[in-house]
Image (tube, rainbow, N blue to C red; front, top):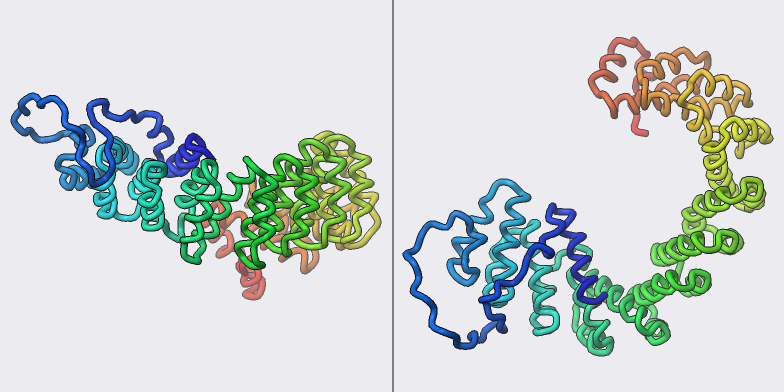
Length: 442
């Protein structure tokens, strides 16, 4: 991640707090000499006599090296968050260029929040090349568990592009904490973009543990963008868990864009578990976009029940967008059993815009599949007409589907209109046991 990407990373953070273009709007003051913290600026021509001091109506327009305490207090007293953040940037950015040491002292007095976060990114970015030790100290000082190590990540990514060996040496000095792992991932990702074999060899050579996993993940996520099939094969070197899942998801995402059939071929070879479950729906949809019959055949060939159900539901979702009637007939033709129960409960949402037709379709199913479809239909119907949905559910002839459907519809109603849902419940005169089941957490 070079300097421009570092700025983009910072801009994403700034966008989340309401200042998406501040870096683009700021330019250094041409009359302000940039010098290192603790050194005096070069002597220049004598300044013109200053005018008598006046009250600053805009502290952001003041000379950043004068009256900093008062200017900062005035800026932070602005009640509007967006104006406060923009004013802080206009004042702090020139101060960082003119006197980084003073900027650091001032930033320490800023309370936690968008201004402190923005200022830390700007200060670390400025010091990253001219004063690496100062940049690292500032990044460590202003990092917090809540930021996920982003500040250190920006810094180490930049250093890794310039000199991976020097970046690694600085990284070794970090204490063992979550920010160290985040810095390592950013460092290795940047290194892997420049020299993939060297970065991967270094990662493989680490002792077993969290840092080896983080380094391998960073290498393989970068590899996934260039050679997703190779990244999928290499992911076996990671222990089962979140790191392996992230690599596989990224690799399959890229592979699906290029070779959906290859992604479908590789997916069943993954070990059963969360990674396979998370990816199967995407693969099934990608296949269905190209070939519905082929996607159905692939889904039916999956060995794990729940994975097969997810895949089949995803194919039917694509099919329903093209021809809902044909997809609905296919579901009716499935043999009774757990597969039909699950698929019917998922597919009915594609018919819920016309509740009478959805009800008629569900009644053509076997009892267990019908009940699963009724519960889902009640919830989907309640999104647009909650009173109608609960009235229909309450009139269902048998338990437990009546209470289950009623609970599903009423939960949606409570989310959309708490007062209306409570009023209906108070007037319904339901038995206490039924009322408790309706209000039970779902």
